[in-house]
Image 1 (cartoon, rainbow, N blue to C red):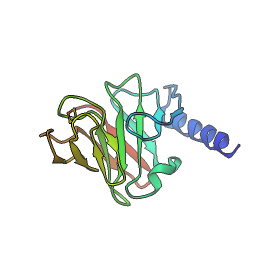
Image 2 (cartoon, rainbow, N blue to C red):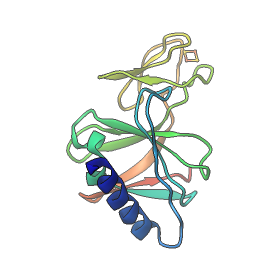
Image 3 (cartoon, helix red, strand yellow):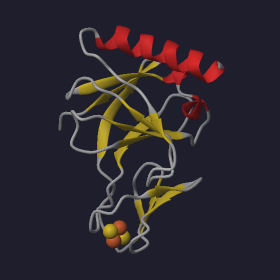
Amino acid sequence: MKENVDRRRFLQHITAIAGAAIPVLFTVPGCATGLTTYRIIGSSEKIELPVLEYPELQEIGGAIEIESPSWPENIVVVRLSTSIFVALSSTCTHLGCTVRKEPAFFRCPCHGSTYTLDGTVVRGPAERPLQSYATTFSGTNLTIQLEK
Ligand code: FES
């Protein structure tokens, strides 16, 4: 019951932020990244996440995955500190498998590449960091800029 109320409140909040867009939210447990996935329909240029509405982002090291038909790929959002978040591609830069979130790093299940939570490679064969998207945090809302 509480989950339904939280979800409804969150949907109302996202709708208010997105304006005319009609965001739809649901979660998909057990996705390839190991994170809860939130589906959002909205802008292809940026998204604003009301951080307080995501329980997973209340702790440092917490993360979620967000997806949208408007974006070319899913994005993993990680809280690195009280005020710093990163938004990363979940696509391994070696040969394109989806990386999996472990408590303190990301690991690719295909050939073992390992990345820190900010996307830096610490073990190959990948040589490049996970692609990152610019973020700004207002203290309540996280804005992820999807344009490159
Ligand atoms: S595709 Fe990720 S390590 Fe090869």
